Length: 492
Ligand code: BES
Ligand code: MN
Ligand code: ZN
Image (cartoon, rainbow, N blue to C red; front, side, top):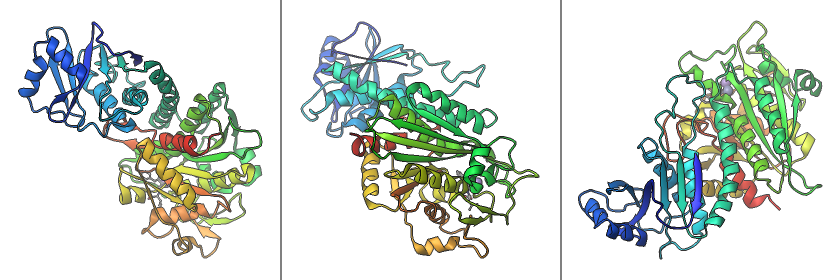
């Protein structure tokens, strides 16, 4: 999709989007077009149920062109997120309309004066985010085959500033798209080694990327991670990505992702129905990868580390058994109760390794960890856990700015001791109740004294329905929130 910015005016061709406030009050430019068309807009509003309510849309046809009336509501809510939603909605309503170009007249008015350039940039960003498609495996009916809309132009005063703000947002969109692509790739194409190769390709952005194989991980004593991959014919990998955009001596911030490229459950095999969804059990690793891409792409002034544990959980003659006891890199032993509780095993070693090697300011892990998280919060909010109230505060505000919902979940000794084992230091699966909480408590045992947070993105990584800025499929959830966290609290 092409996106451009220009000064306010009416280009000769293409559809026009014009704003209307609640109670059908037209903005100045809307009035101008209405006058020039002999009152066609007034007439169309009169003959429809369009009244300018927030995000209401009405197409009006003059002899020359399509006019899209866009409802602004009372006008007071027009902030960056509102504008993104509008961009997404404008894109989806015109995508297959026959229009090739649309110009959005982003006009200032008395109710919302501040930051018009920023809001215009975010409108374009919303359209861009919605325009994403994953159709590389369709040989006939490409998802984009009926798409006529090729270009969105945002007409706004201070358009050079809008363009500049937009260019930074494009770097974030690239990261989101990378994460969505990774999540959507089928598991015969995306497995630990091919995933790692996609990450080494990020070196061209200035990221330092290291790939550890099973030999290196054995030497480090990563028995928890390796046990998960041991039934797979694909070699497990651990990938370390580093972005050094901050001061030399400054400690990094660290992001750790669960990258189970396919989760059959292992010997504790999952039921067949819906198992194909488990290709996106590497969603945490995808978000971390997308975030690192975004940070490098926008040259963030921070030192950041991204670590992803990449494995495949398969049943096999060599697979891990329920009842096995493994020794993690930390030296702590784990009794395997259920081979389907594998994500925490991967993260146990990845977190320990990250903490010991980098001594980060904080560690945030992301994982499609438990079905119980979806039972608790559905696909609306991402449940998160943290041992640090300061970090919680920063994340709440970052998530709010990014337009992604998060909800804090509890930790505590009561839950923690539910993971004690009779024969080892802990077990990998506890009782059914509080499954997401006990999983988080398990992870906490591998964090030592580091501010840490765990996002259980089980309900967030994939969506089966379109939303204004996220088409159905892989969502890239979390890239935005974490990028915002870095931007507001961890950049020089
Ligand atoms: N990857 C799954 C969790 C999951 C399930 C994510 C459905 C998204 C949708 C995870 O590895 C898993 O299987 N967890 C088990 C844990 C249990 C065995 C303690 C679960 O949630 O049932
Ligand atoms: Mn599992
Ligand atoms: Zn899993």
